[in-house]
Length: 120
Image 1 (cartoon, rainbow, N blue to C red):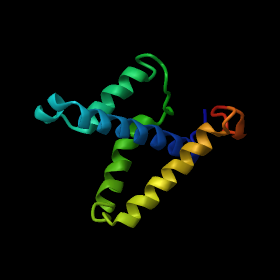
Image 2 (cartoon, one colour):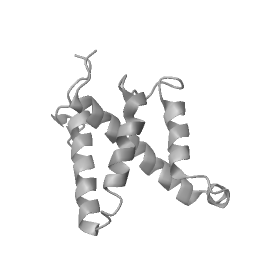
Image 3 (cartoon, helix red, strand yellow):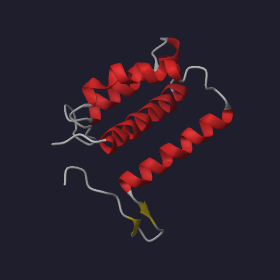
């Protein structure tokens, strides 16, 4: 299977959603805060639980294991970009990428904007 930039985009979308869910769980559960368990660790637990080694609900590309070196560069490059406008634009971009991957449905449940199929 070939690896493309779109696969990377889908993986980042899934990882970002896992981080968001983990942050919400950490905010709601006081023991996780008292034990100083980071959001990334909780998201990793959810990733393993829901991934191909667990329930098989979510799948990442075959290159997901090589993202650590790339993402540490992105982390240090964007460390001081904490402007509210930058964060809002990043959130909107993430929302758009998720819509591209999973499609947009109308009130009746009909797919309005179809999602592309990976691996085809």
